[in-house]
Amino acid sequence: MSNPNSREATPSNTPTVSSLPQKRALEDDHQPAVSSPLNPDFKTAKAEDSLSGRAPRAKKESFKKRESKGASLAPESSSARATPDPKSAPRKNNKKRKDDPAPIRYQLPPPRTSDFDPPRGPLFSHFQTKTLADGTEVQFNETSDHVYNKKGFHYTHCIADPNFPSTIYYRQSETEPFEARLNFEDTSTHMYLDEGGHHVTTDKGWRMAKANVGVREGRWYWECKITSGIPRRKSTDGESTGGHVRLGWARREATLDAPVGFDAYSYGLRDVAGQKVFMSRPKDFFIKGDDIREGDVIGLEINLPSETLHRKVVEGHYNKAVDFKDEGNDILEAATIIRDRVPIRFKAHLYFEQIDYQATKELEELMNPSPVISSSGGVGASNERPDPSHPYPSLRTLPHSNVKIYKNGVEMGTAFEDLLAFLPPASKPTTQVGAREGLDDGMLGYYPAISVFRGGAAQVNLGPKFWFPPEDLETDGADRMDIEQTQTSKLRRLRPLSERYDEQIVEDIVYDIIDEVDWWMRDGGVTGKGVTSGALRSGVATQNGGVQGSEIKELVQDDE
Image 1: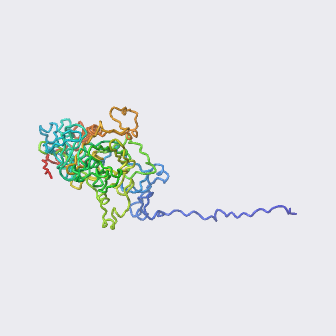
Image 2 (image 1 turned 90 degrees about the vertical axis):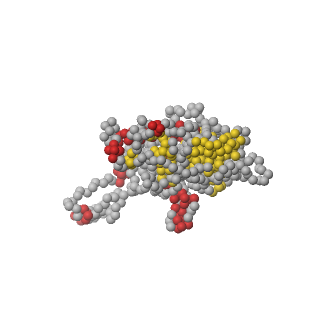
């Protein structure tokens, strides 16, 4: 008799193994219809079968393995990508690769005996003598017998040196006075300077002069005193008879026949109302009625991020969430400096001539937006203001960059922020034969610049002894060369621009030595049986910076 409280066993509904649906075997053509980041070299089975024999399937790394290596899953893009991948690190420039460019090398005749003589400065012809407000007399001179940086070319002094045979004996040099000053070659025509390169004036319209030192990173300071401009007391007829002055910071591409702040390549300050000017658009900066008059001393401070952060911006690797702090330069990552230049003669002088950088169409469009270009999808149609991640490299700005203004020792505030980047590809060379894009010649940066108009005159003071030094200014006398000092703290120090002159000399020497050793190795080193040696004899251009047969040409420039 069965127990009424007992449970019957639950019938099992588990199907037999034979009744389970079997997993369908993958077919040979079970692959994505199109290529993807994980399978960029996709080929269909039919394409493989068409080949002679069946090739083994290429083994690809898994998604997680690639992710662990920090590789981007997106295809490699150009430097113009608007949203950079924070995991894709920039290429380390310190590792020499076979496809790294080298300077163009020229086949030249042996140097003349006079080529070994130290270079000389310009000739000075007296123009006028002005008496300053403090009673000091300044003699202004017209400079001659030197070249001007114009018509798409940039010039630096050079000298023949027997210690540089592989680079055809020529290296860079300087002329007196050996200090930070205005650059006689980097001024507009019809500008008159004193022999020391510190005073400047003109009797024409707006003209610009730049200093012989430029900055690429860090904090720097210089001063300018208005010696002739808006008078302290207004004249009875209400008209100014002293001319006008503008001052600021300018890039290599800034035109010399216009005032500072004329285009997107310079940031300027007007004497009238103390307005700041950028792209010819003045904006109020000083309080109303506060002009810059004769005798006033204007201090200009620039703050630029490290070159490491700068290169992240122009190469498209900057990410605001990651790079919110400038950690200084990576000592293992140095800039690749390539100087394509050839020695030329100008009267009794020797210069290196190289193709200069030019204004880009993106910045020209930014200054003067064109309805035609905007309607056709050009720069204006993007409606994007310059920023560190702009699609166009020339419109990318530098984080943590600004320009501060001081007047007679009083800080007036920050006039400009987020300055435009200048390292390639943000800067491009003039389009002509021999120009190569993407190369940094080591002289890109922001330069002290001053413009004068019809009698306006000014005196530049690049340090180290300033009229009104800022409280946090550090000079050579300060204990600032601590070997344990970090790169970040070094960039945060405010330094006189005069210190940059010695740094530029050291950089030029190092670049000259690097070029000499590089070409010596290409020539085969101690054996002298390199590929370049044969090219030198035949005069045939070689790859990655080869040889071009040429004589040292004589340069002719007019004064207009």
